[in-house]
Image 1 (tube, rainbow, N blue to C red):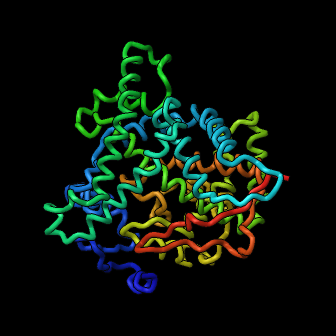
Image 2 (cartoon, rainbow, N blue to C red):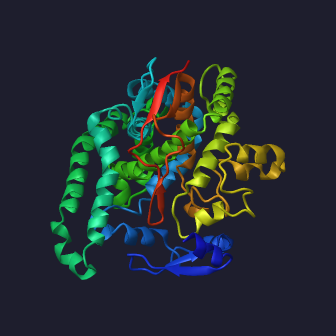
Image 3 (cartoon, rainbow, N blue to C red):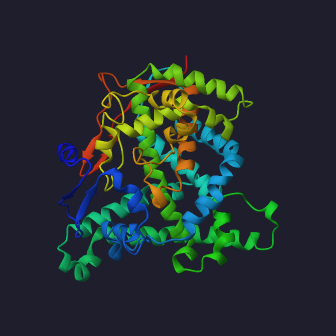
Length: 419
């Protein structure tokens, strides 16, 4: 694949996959042109419908209320909620990753899954459910059930799917998951609606569930009105993606110990300048951590119909591209023109930075995800030392399949209380 993308740099090529539609891979120079095309010509929703087999999995891809609330409510609220979210991160990590004076082997991916699910749930659905095992099971495993069902459908011959897909155990398990989620989320959602129906804005809970409830009259479509499935969709979009990015960062830190004191010193200074609280201002000031995360994702990008790996490995864009340089983007922000500093931030999207997509389909939740990852990293850095497991001498290689690259979820790291 890498050789192909180099061969067709500045051009277009086609690849064969199990999907019905023709897969065309484009050079990033076409992105501004693609971004101008209407959804009737270039539809992300239809592409997701096809790839996720939504006709059979019954997951919803067109849910207008979700991006509307994320961009209109969640992102602007981060400066207001950062202190509360940071406190939740600290409390959850104290449960999932308690410090020990001795080096302790830990599956960090597993711990991060639960941590991200709880912290995200605290914002998405509120404290009524966010730490319950019932919610965590649904929030974490709904994604896995969807993917298992999707793969099971794709393994069937297309002409058999309308007749026999309903017999697939993976689909039955997914439908059961959705029904069970409605059984325990539905009453909480309905109670919240009743309790806050005649309450002033200042007395309402300040979380996404409440914002969704308040916005329901503006989104009369059936998908937006089903708040249980909206919540499952938020989990599907947020929890595993955020966890994989954080796991990549921890694997890099454990393997490249020289970055620990650099990021720890920066975090300590940011906390000292903000009364010990990870405010939005504190997070924004941590430019070295921001750079470390952006470089982490440059080396392990997500998949799209743009050759992100080749872009990230192009020496004309990134000098010495195969070398991990955790301060690469920090230095670009410090030394480059002020007007271009924003393009080097972790959350920035442009033709040479495709981690969060591009244009109108760029990930709307990237600001929350970035804040959450930075908070988790900061709290762990300030409370723990870390290193690779005994016998490991270099960064654990990612697992690659198809166009995906993910950190190996089975690997363990060693942690102890910060000395």
